[in-house]
Amino acid sequence: MGDKDRLVRNLINEGYLKTPKIIKAFKSVDRSVFVPKEHRIHAYADYPLPIGHGQTISAPHMVAIMTELLEPQKTDKVLEIGAGSGYQAAILSKLVNKVYTIELDPELADFAKENLKKAGIKNVEVIVGDGSKGYEKEAPYDKIILTCATEDFPKPLIEQLKEGGIIMGPLGDSFFQNLIVARKIKGCLERKNYGGCVFVPLRH
Ligand code: SAH
Image 1: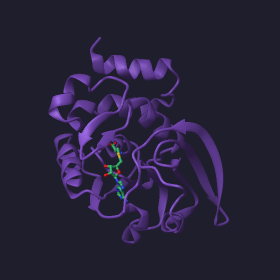
Image 2: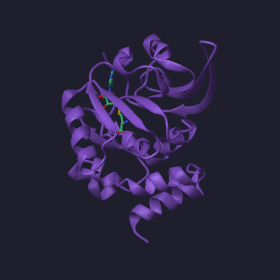
Image 3: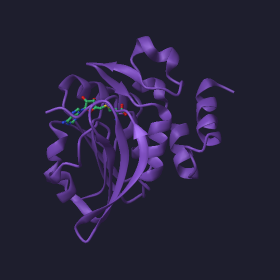
Image 4: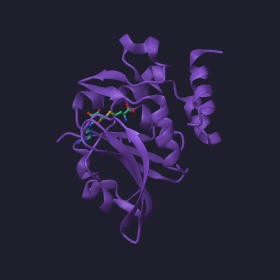
């Protein structure tokens, strides 16, 4: 068994990957395509890796947890804040209709675009900008996923989420956060806490 298959098998055995279509998505996206050359030997290890500019590609188990909790549906339009390497967006692209992903750093946005192109993924659009403002042009979204840490969900994102939709992200300070998953019910967020995590902070 190759390292790539072993990673997916471990994510299943450890209980992070559960849903068959999500397991399939993980098998179909090669993480090494999204990792800078110098770290490629660690591409199938279950920890975050540097992608330059002080940013990181999340650990595979964190991508698995978030993807499962997002309950992706084939018809979904998803907004991601923090494209980084493009890996999380690539996984989601296999499970939903369309992903818009916003990246503050123009060079990282180019990195994500190139990686997605190499992976042959066509239903992800990378946008350069401040994701805390959301992306009004394509709103409303079925799901919104933040992959950088913030004190609370920015208001524009809540407004751009469909009624019944899911928003999730690491909420807390720049050192430690809780993974919060919320559903928009009658305009208000019903939140659930899925425990501690560490992400790079959202910047302005
Ligand atoms: N989802 C990424 C990992 C993201 S790391 C992956 O799969 O690789 C967090 C990213 O959020 C970094 O690339 C950082 O530059 C970006 N970021 C920080 N503040 C932001 C903001 N206000 N808007 C958009 N992106 C932001």
